[in-house]
Length: 205
Image (tube, rainbow, N blue to C red):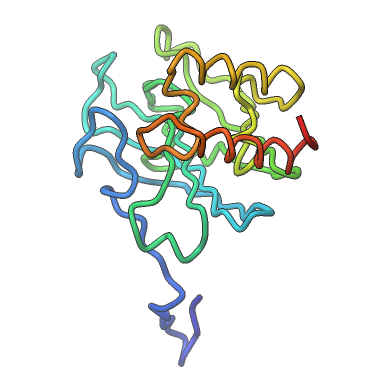
């Protein structure tokens, strides 16, 4: 939130959240290796704060050109944004920017997000890492959030009768995919949490 006083903006710290590098780390990254740009934000029905943004790497991983990724992060609540509580994923592999497609660096704001229930549709454009000079293409990614994401045991972005079967199979196999509460232990609580999530979305399994 910002107030305008005599033409100048005064920001209210209690209503402003800075999302720092350390809150958005994924495997293999260290603070300072990327720059954040072009955020889009959505609040879902469970109070989660969903961010779609561009992550610009300092150096190219695949080519000599600067590279970016489209990244998605979800905080479980507004209050949790002051801590390291974001679930982060890259929606794309690193892709090169060019002089005509410069997303995340100078211009070309080619992304947006829309919410339907517990489904978020993320639209963005990217180049082909193998042939960046050929231009860019538009993509739409369908993501589940909150209880829907927990209930989607087979991870196909759909919640249906196949998911309880997939969860029980993962639990019997001792797979980390069955660790619903992410406490590093597979036990009865995971079964309880999964059943609650699935029931909230699709009714009793």
